[in-house]
Image (cartoon, rainbow, N blue to C red):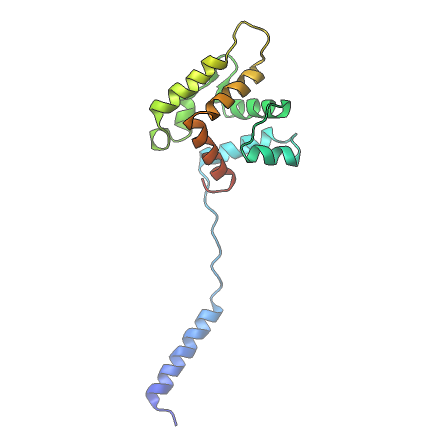
Length: 163
């Protein structure tokens, strides 16, 4: 025969098991995206409307081949964000501010890299290069710098909902 203390312990244990069984599993709460991340995603979606699924996947993997659809996508993306102007190229200061400023980027490294790529890839006055071509070449130039590595990581986080 069970004692009172054993019955009390047993009833508390059963109550605990009942509570645990009835508690719903934790539902993962999606991260709230920052306004800047949402703007990136909107520009990505709007500029990627004409892309095939394979082309979109390639861009999401940060693979930027020299192809017409990539050049047009990049020009649309950066222009829509107002971080590219056809007259002057990438807006280095606005890019730094838009991507979190000194908290997230090495400003002393980012500004010269972006401005340097604008200058290196510009061929103002020669009608051979369109602004779409210039945007692509300047972007590829920036990707080859530490700023480009940071951009790839950041965009992957944005696309995957981690930023």
